[in-house]
Amino acid sequence: MSATVKEKVMFAATVSLKPSSYTAANGTIVHYLQRPYYTYTPTVGGAAVFAVLFGISLVVLSVQLWQYSKQRTSMERQIMADGSVSRDQTEDVESHDDGGLGLAAPAAVQPCSNARLIGKFVPLMVGIAVEIGGYAARIASRNDLYSIGPYVAQAVMLLVAPALMAATIYMNFGRLLTLLRATQLSIVPARFNTTIFVMGDILSFVLQGAGGGILGASDNHQLGSNIVIGGLAIQVFVFGFFVATEVRFLMCARRMSPVAYRISRHWKVLNINLFVSSLLILARSIVRLVEFAQGFNGYIMEHEWFIYVFDAVPMFLVVVSFIVFFNNGNLFRVEFECTSMISDSRKYSMDTMTGCIDK
Image 1 (cartoon, rainbow, N blue to C red):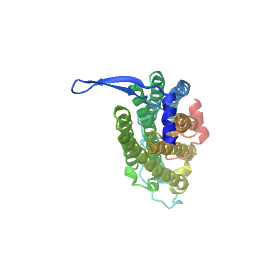
Image 2 (image 1 turned 45 degrees about the vertical axis):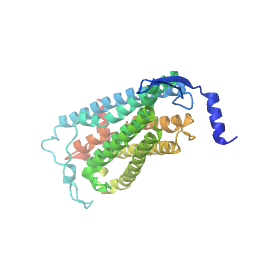
Image 3 (image 1 turned 120 degrees about the horizontal axis):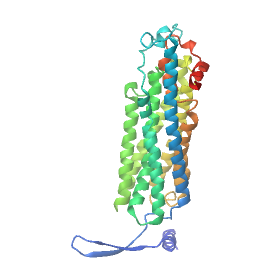
Image 4 (image 1 turned 180 degrees about the vertical axis):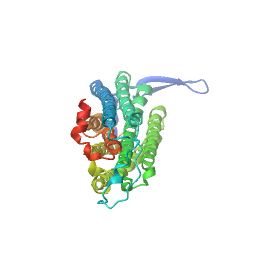
């Protein structure tokens, strides 16, 4: 018996075909046997666990954003209340540089409001919510393997959620470049850095969403699969290019930035977080690219554990990375250090700023 025949026999033995019918354009009722959308029965346990984990992380991250935005405001008020530093009378920190770096003093950076900084994390929060929806849809699929709604919902949501999270990584990195006055380290033109990466991310998002929809709503699975492959390929390319930019920044920022040596290591911890998160999404995207390249009869598509080990786990680790590193490397702290520690920055030590938080 050939391998193909064996596969068909095994499928017939493990999956039942559901009698279905539809009315053709000429009014004739067509009867057929409908195959389930999965080659396996989705497990409720795995989907439920990750839905709960992502739900908890969404709450924790929301609390952290609120907490650190308040801490930034508290620290700024403490410095303003000191009386020796006034926003109206201060100059940019580089204007007092002794020239030891041999760099011309760049223009001052306009501070971002807390609302704008929180906005940079909105895609991440939405991505987490989409992950929750995706695994909830897989639970719904368990009750009806022949229902197209839950199948398409989980396919699209789990495909596009990483693209949403990636947007937060790009926006955080773009702001980091600006705050450290290190835009010259960007491989692409600095003024277009965030725009280029986010636009590539949006294109990947649209293609993966459209391809995922076609996979469930159309019989042309090959077309849907090809579109998803195109979206994943763009995501892999953009992330590979972005990781190279991050590495260059991490290696050279201390030497090239006129600000990095004056502030704490929060900027470095933040960039390491962005770098690790990027690698996790890149690895996940490569596996999913291979999955769709293999097709619906491929090994990855026919084994559910891949969706958890190579999609759920990496994406959850991305969220955990933001939560864990937030205390020692978050954008609010870097924003404060680079835009508030001005005129006499050495006066405000890390102990002083920690004291502000405690108060």
